[in-house]
Length: 114
Image (tube, rainbow, N blue to C red; front, side, top):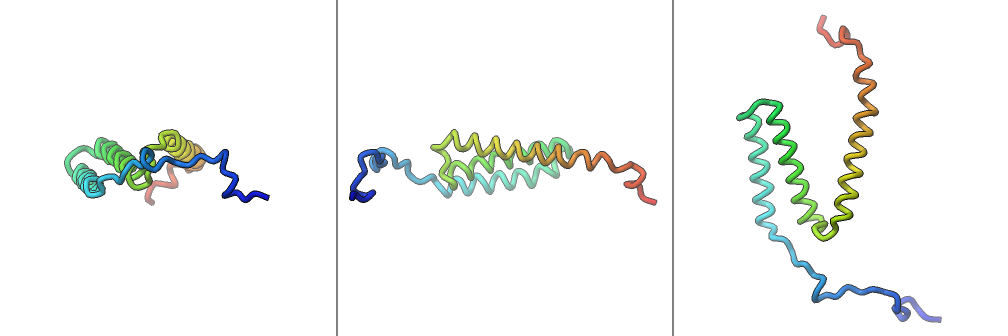
């Protein structure tokens, strides 16, 4: 009876010399994340609230992409990144459309101060 270690005819082993992609430049990524954090903190004081919220969310998406690519090692997994982002967007839409009917069902006179 052969063991699994001996029966490796169908196994695919990575080529260490060609499949290693190296480490990202962590200091550069950290400085980028800190710069984006600073930008999102300062934006709130400089522009209108609607534009500030839009820009803050755009920097948050950029920071998320930096973390996913460099710290989660998903730079070389584009299909997996697409699946994760699509799943998150679907969950957010499900949450929004699940909560929205409850929010609009509250009469406006309940929310006014007495």
